[in-house]
View 1 (cartoon, chains in turn brown, purple):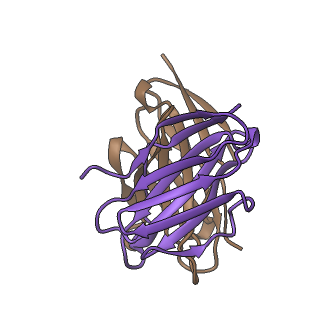
View 2 (cartoon, chains in turn purple, blue):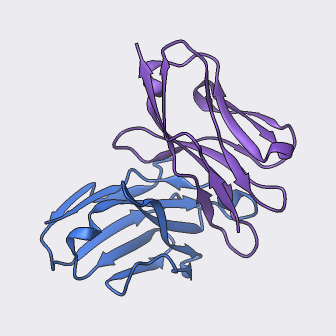
Amino acid sequence: AQSVTQPDIHITVSEGASLELRCNYSYGATPYLFWYVQSPGQGLQLLLKYFSGDTLVQGIKGFEAEFKRSQSSFNLRKPSVHWSDAAEYFCAVGAGGATNKLIFGTGTLLAVQP
Amino acid sequence: DAGVIQSPRHEVTEMGQEVTLRCKPISGHDYLFWYRQTMMRGLELLIYFNNNVPIDDSGMPEDRFSAKMPNASFSTLKIQPSEPRDSAVYFCASSPPGSPLFYEQFFGPGTRLTVL
C-alpha cells in the first residue's frame, strides 16, 4: 500500500538558515508528489507538485523539492528561511489505481528562531 | 477565484445537537473531499465525491456522519447527534477533472467544531 513518511516531527531553524524537510514515499509506479503548508488556523496551501519531467521542481515562496526515485524521496528545501515560514508542512502522494485519494504524511512542524 | 468556501468558520454546540458544515468548491472542479484534522489522528479523509456522486466513504467514522452533494457547487457534512469526540477542524477540498490533476487538491479554510 502507498505510504508517506516524514521522519521529523519538529524542526527548529534560525532565520536566514537553509532548510530541508524530509519525505519518503512507498509507491510502486511513478508517483505524483506534493508538498502542502499549513499556517496556524489556516487550511492547507499547495507549495509545489511533481508529476513528471524535471526532478527538481520549484514552488511558491521560494521553496523547491527534488524527486529522487532511487531513494524514494521528495525532500523540500529552501535556501534562506524567513520567520513567516513557521508552519506545518505536509508531504503527500497520489494514491493511484482506481482512487483519487492523496496519502498524507504526518507533518513536520517548523519553528523559526530570530 | 474565490477558492473553496466553508461555513461556518467556527461552530460551538452541545452534545446531542445536529451540526451541519457547508462547502462550496472551486467552480469547474468536479472532485470534492471532506477531511477531519485532530492532534491525535492528524488529517483523515472522510469521504470524497466525483460529479456529485460519493465515491469513497470508507473514512466516515460512523452512522452519525453523513455527507451530501446535491449539486456541483454545494456540499454538506452533517453530524447527528454530535459528541465531544467529534471536536476537530473539518476541511473541504476540491480538485479539477483529469489525471493527474485530480490529485491537486485545493483546501478551504476549515470549520473548527467544538462539541461541549
